[in-house]
Length: 302
Image (cartoon, rainbow, N blue to C red; front, side):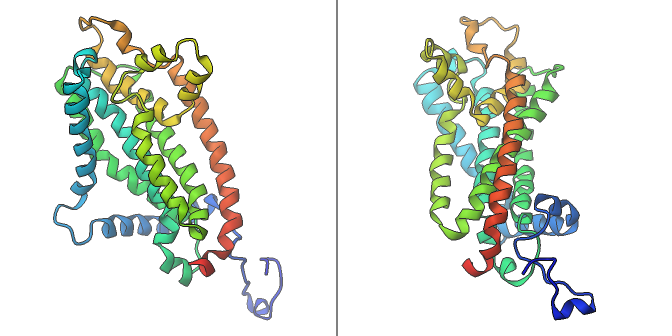
């Protein structure tokens, strides 16, 4: 029954609403208080019963960092060819970690909150959006570690620093949310979508110039401009290079480097970031429409 249809109860000022109706993501901003409560609940539940609390969110990334730094950096020798290799890795890992967490948490957000979906009517988009905010909160200490490591290795801010950081974080969060919102609706019906997310997030670190320099990819794909453009169409790769522009590049500029080409990042980096951000907004709009078509049966499926 649609919102406009009359019912016996409507004579007393009551209206029945279609479960799939509403303003979509716009409704999230009209329910800011509910969003705040959901974010608090997500943070509390995630670390409930643990002694170390939020520190567990960084156990896996830190372990990956040490594996990359020791195995790929020290054993394979990239630490000798990429200056300040540690900051180079961590700059890319910030974006990889944020994308993976946003993508995974938003995809599972509706299923994870099935008790609320069954019992009360509220904009279902609140759950993916709340997951994005929780992921952004969780990434803050990671950024603090990156900042301290950069300062310790000679970092001084430049005029590009803040725009590059803001664009990089916004791009990867928007892209992760757009994919996660799309997947979250289908994940209610087919849990296979959660498994697809696991595969994608496993491959993500290798799609970003993080444990290798961008010039290595550019050299390998020289003469294959289409493949290089496909590589650069990855918003996570561009966001990683934007964060590297903000933190890694200022620590190595002016240093004596045997091969200066190792400092190269994607050409027209800021423009690429803005174009991919606009594309992510378009994907988000499409994902919203798909989500609205699916959400009417969420309660029954859960």
